[in-house]
Image 1 (cartoon, rainbow, N blue to C red):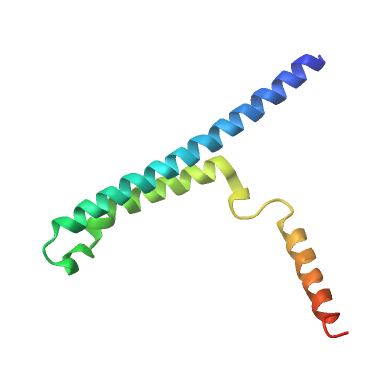
Image 2: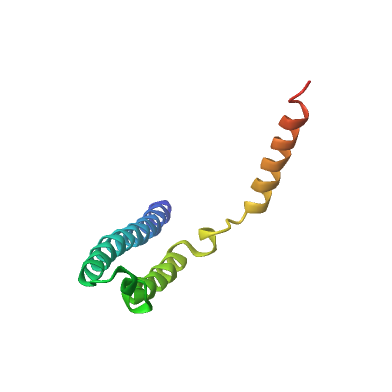
Amino acid sequence: MEKYSEASRYNRAKKKVDKIKGFYTHAIVYVVINTMLLSMIYTGYANVTDFWNFGSFSTAIGWGIGLFVHGISVFGKQLFFSSNWEEKKMEQFLKEEEQNNHKWE
């Protein structure tokens, strides 16, 4: 039974790492492709002010929303707040306040 439990834990950890790796790959591809697309679009306009319209950024915006959703699916709520986020922040503020109180002693 112990081997099964250890193998199961390993498989879950491997899947989680693969999901994180997939997200980072997605983010890198997003940056590279959109940088290339935006630079090609920018050089295609004779007047620079024509570049600043929704059409120039629609791919980056749409894909960015998809990347955000991908991040939520991989990291869940921990993307913004972990389960003990409040506790850690309170401890941080208390330490800062304590340091500031002893600063002039």
